Amino acid sequence: MTAPGILQACSRCGSRWPVALGANGPVPARWCPRCRGTLLAPVSAGPAPAHVAPQPQSPQPVAQHSAPARTRSGLPRGYRWIARMPAPPVDESAAGRGSQPLGPTPRYREIPRWGLPVGPAPAAPSGTPTPKYQSWASSARSTMRILVWALILGVIAEAFRYGLLLWNQSHLVGRFTVAISDALSLVIGVLTPVVVILSAIGCAAWLVRTRAERYARSGWRDPRSVRSIFLGALIPGWNLLMPGVLLTELALLDEADGVAAGGPGLPPTGTARAPAGRTRLGWLRGVGDKFQRTFADLSALWLIGFWWGMWVLTNVTVVGVLMARFDTSSQGRADGVLFTLYAYVLALAVAGLTIKVMARFDETPTAARAVPARWLIAT
Image (cartoon, rainbow, N blue to C red; front, top):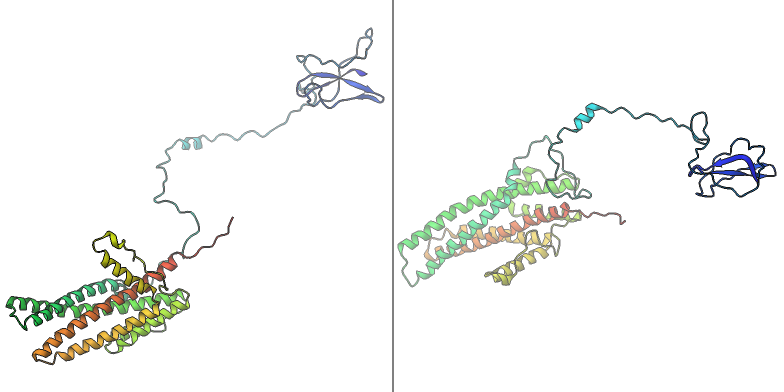
C-alpha cells in the first residue's frame, strides 16, 4: 500500500516513485528501483480527486520528462547552491613576459656522474705564499730523467774510450778518432756534474715537500726543519747517511698510517706494457716488465735499503776514480778510464732507483687516496 499524493524523486535518473504506507505513516525508500540512485526526500504531489478512489497497485515510474518539484531557490528539492571563491585575476604583464625568448638550451659540458662525492673536498686557496722549493720539487723527476740520459751518454763515451785503449794495444788509432773520444769525455765530464748538482737540489726539495705533505695528512708537523733536510741531502759525506734516514722515516710514517707506499704485489701507475710477442723488441720489453714487477713486489723499506746501499757504493767508487787520477802512468790512466766507466754504470743504476723511489711515494699513495673505499647501504 502506498501513501496517496506522496512521491520520492531519484537524484540520478529523475524518476518519481510513490512512498509506501506503513502502520505509523509513510515509509520513505533510500534507493531507486531503476538505477539504484539515491532517492530524495518525499514531496507532496497534491490531493488526489475525490471521485477517484486509491487503488493498491505496484509502483509505476513516472515519465522521465516530467520535471521534479522546485523550491524557492529554483532548484529541485535536495539541491542547494554552493558559493566558491572567484579565480584570481590574470596578470597580463606576467603573460607578456612568458612570450620572451628563454635563451640557449642548457646542456652538460661532460657526462654527469651522479653519486656521493669521491675524495676530500678541495682545499680553499690560502693567502700564504708558495715556498721557493716547490718549483724545484715539481721538476725533480724531470731533472733525474735528464741525468739518466747524461749518464747513458757517459757510459757510451767511456766504453768507447776504453775500447780504443784495448784496440791500441795491437793497432794504431787515428788522430781524428782519438779527438772525438777526448771531446766526448770532456763534454760529458763537464755536463754530468752540473746535472748531478741540479738533480741533488731537486731531490732535496722533493724530499722536503713529500715529508711535509705526509706529516700534514697524519695531523703532525715535520720534526725536521727545511734547512736541516737540505743540509743533510747536499753536504758531501753527510749526504751518505741522511737521505736514507729521511726516506726510512717517510716509509715508516706511511706504514703507520695504513698506506704503505706501494705495498707488495701492487705495480706502480703506468707500468702496463704490450704483450712481448706483438713487437719486434718484445724480449726487451719482457725483461723490463720483469724488473718492474720485481721492484713492485718489494716493500718501500726494502727498496729504500737497496737504494741506500747503491748510493753509498756509488759515492765510494767516485772517490776511487778521483784518487786514480793522480796516477799518471799509462796503466794508471787505463785503470782510470775503467773506474770511470764503473762509476757511470753505478750512477746510472742509482738514478734509476731514485726515480723508482720517488714514483713509489708520489704515485701509489696518491692513487690510493684519490679513490677511497665508499660504503653504501644496500637497498
